[in-house]
Length: 227
Image (cartoon, rainbow, N blue to C red):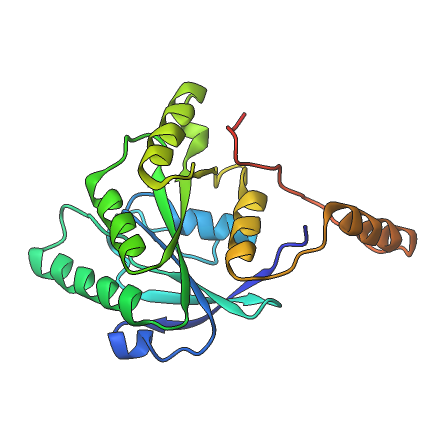
C-alpha cells in the first residue's frame, strides 16, 4: 500500500483549541514511556517529525498531524501516568483528555498504545474501558516488539484480547514492523479506500516500466509476531 504523508499542522494546549478543528480525527494515546513519538516517526517514515524526549512526561501539548492526501488528523495526545508529574499536572491533563474524548465530534477512534514488555496496566485498561463506554472505537497497538521475546508477545496479545475482544497490532518502531497493518487498521476506521494488493502491484509495475521509482521500502505485514 502507498503510505500517506504526515504534516505537523497545529499544536493545541486548551480544550477550546482541541475542539476547534473541523477534519475527522483519530487519536493516539499511551503511557509517557510507551514510545508514541517513535511510533509516529515510523508511521511517517521520518526520524524527527515527532520529537522524542529523553524525559518521560515532558510533552504537554497536543499535536495535530494532517494525513495527506487522505484528509484527516492523527492527533498525538500527551503521555499519561508519569510518576514524577505533580498531582495538579496529572489532574489537569486527565480532565483535558476526558473532555476531548467525550466532546470532540470529529474524533472517530482511539489508538491505544501499550508496552509489549508489560502485562496490561490498570491505567491503560481504564482508558480503554472509558473510551468504549462513550462509544469510541479502540485500536490496541503493542509497541517495542523488538525488545520482547516471542512468547511475551503472544502472552500480551492474549491478555489484551481477553480485555478488549481484539488482539493488538504488533509493532516495532525500530524496524517499522507492523506499520502497514497499523495504517490499514486506521484506514478502515476512517473509511479510506485503499487499492488492493493486485491493483497496487499493477500500478508499481506500470510506474517501473515508465522509468518511475515504483514503491520502495515496503514494510512487512504485521498482526502476528515480530521476527
